Amino acid sequence: MIEGFRRVTTTVDGADVAAHVGGDGPALLLLHGFPQTHEVWRHVAPELARSHTVICPDLPGYGDSAVPESLAKRTTARTLLEVARRLGHGRVAVVGHDRGALVALRAALDHPEVVTHLAVLDVLPTVETWDALHGTAGVFAFHLFLLAHPAPLPETMIGADPDGFFGHFLDAWTVVPGAIPPEVRERYLAACRRPETIRAICEDYRAGATVDVDHDRADRERGRRVAAPTLALWQDPGDAVLPFDPGEVWSRWTGTLSTATLGAGHFLPEEVPADVVAHLRRHLDA
Image (tube, rainbow, N blue to C red):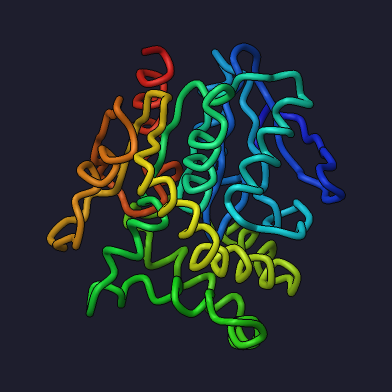
């Protein structure tokens, strides 16, 4: 799915993790978000592979990666860093979009000796997200509440029309025409409509409303911060008034922060890939 990359499968704690790897140089881990797969990086990864060994996994439970026992971000971060280690990389820069950015943050917090650079695209830390959702501000993020409900309620509801559910986000969160072509959109939907993936996505969001919040809150109370240089990119909200200031929020979590707002919707790597590549290159070279 990514030109010039090869597919590898690594088994960690009994569950297979599928990844696409290309390039040569310092290791760079690119982590996708909901409701997508590694293919979100199809434009970005080949450019960054000119100077880095780029590893694009399907997050555990998503795409072609198996569903593990735990989908807590702490566990997922440890799993994906182990994938990089087995590929020969004891140090790695980590870039994440959406759910992948939450895994990237946890990797940087828990493994500062491994993560050299952190970049987070269009997301807030889990605990900060929940803190920001008050009153009508939570309407746009209804899926956070729905998916976190105990099984089998969300699985049953989504299973009745998975293409309608997941397709809503692919369409509503994109503002650049043609950023997600029909054939790519169909591959995302095909990956998400499988019952085991629906269950895994729900478990991911259940963790995001329970154990992940506990881990973030404990770090925040201890004043624990990311040691690696951090880049935060987010979409231009247009006329909308955000119930938070992304730059101010991320500044609480790292002492070395660069920020930028890009003219796109939520899916930055697909809508404005050249801008994302330019910012990441500057960040990784700093």
